[in-house]
Amino acid sequence: MYNYLKVLWKKPEKEMGSIYKDKLVQWRNEPVVTKLDNPTRLDRARSLGYKAKQGIIVARVKVVRGGRKTPKVAGGRRPKRSGRFFSLNKSKQQVAEEKASIRFSNMEVVNSYWVGEDGKSVWYEVILADRDHPSVKNDNELKWVSGTRGRTKRGLTSAGKKSRGLLHKGKKT
Image (cartoon, rainbow, N blue to C red; front, side, top):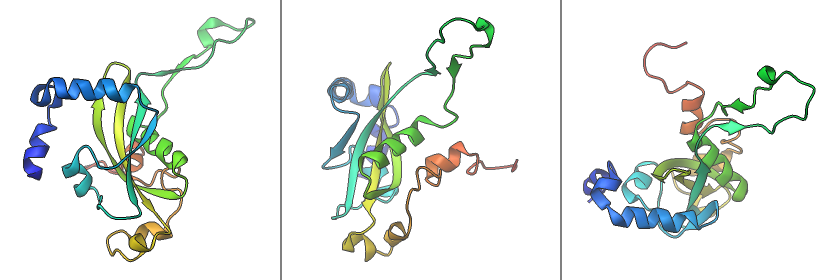
């Protein structure tokens, strides 16, 4: 079953057609961070550490696409040196994980994955685990979460490590 889901999500516009587009329209009207009952991509969530048990949730996060722009300064400066356009130097996925960790401050980000994008936004689903919940503390695969704090802000999630250049295969710089 997971293999079929994986193939379906390789090219969602082609494979799912209008269902995928309808989902995007629905997601546009939702808040930036939305708590979900079930993951949209069960195959990807399970491969990244999701388990259907207490203390673990999934949140869908919307991130604005495109570069960033600082406000225009009021007169007295050379326009050439205003430097209004800049990049965040981190991926959209890392931004999504940070937004989720701020919204659910008692939980720790386990991992995240892409679920969709349109012209204005990109959506990621973030897997979060409650670091103090007994079912998480007793789980051999997830008990490492109870000893950590603030992984997203320190760039210790997989998206954070990738942005910092630590998951690059090949030559180390």
